[in-house]
Length: 335
Image (cartoon, rainbow, N blue to C red):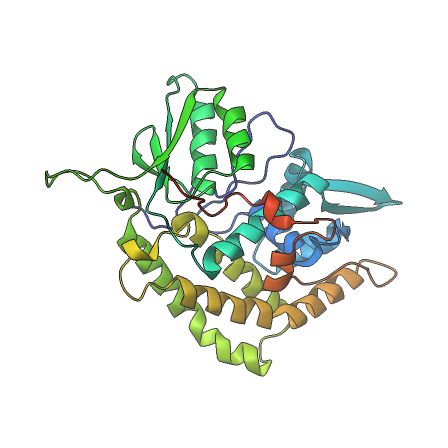
């Protein structure tokens, strides 16, 4: 089996829709890093940054100048970024649609790892049948289901322990043109030893190893972060990398019921470690981003604000209730 982090995409590809967030690849892609950087420091304000500053920040993560400029151009064509020009200086900011999408996704990422809602013992089943000729539509549907926390129990039959929220139902309607059915109910156990339990749609052992790898990688950084020893470009790189890794866990472990998981499940320790590093580096990382942007502007750029986990939970400033935009919601019961 592939590593649990080798997911083709975390954000769904919306086909013909104008906004298409970059596919999440194994490792960091220039487009993915660019989106993470802009979201981490400008999401709530949608502040515009000089393209030269974005290129410089990406260079600190190992992206070449050519790769950075290509990433910015492609993100603008996909509707993720909006460009503006003042004289010979071009700037870019997150589009309103991208900011809303990223805000909803960020809210779900954090809430999904805080604590699992009480489980009622029911499963939501999504069954679909699409002709092989509609390969693009099939990929988009599977990516959307994965993003919503579903996993394939069988080909064409995906399940989740949580109820399908109204916004998610609307998204599935758009992707399938009606070739989908959704059920919610309890599993009927069979006497035969060969039947497959719904929880087996997830590779629990692989997810556990992913959590363990995450804890091994980031635990040694907690003390240097707390002492203020991580600053400048290193602080920005660490925040970008830990977010790019941690954001995969809600897809791998979408609030799976603790009743069905091994003792000592590492969801909570991983979330606490993420918050310690991500929040702990917010101030030095913001300071560095401001310094880089200042090299390409005549005045201090307003609106550069490092996100914390609390900010992600709060959502966009214009959102009255960011939870309404989240991809999923707790179960409300089944017959």
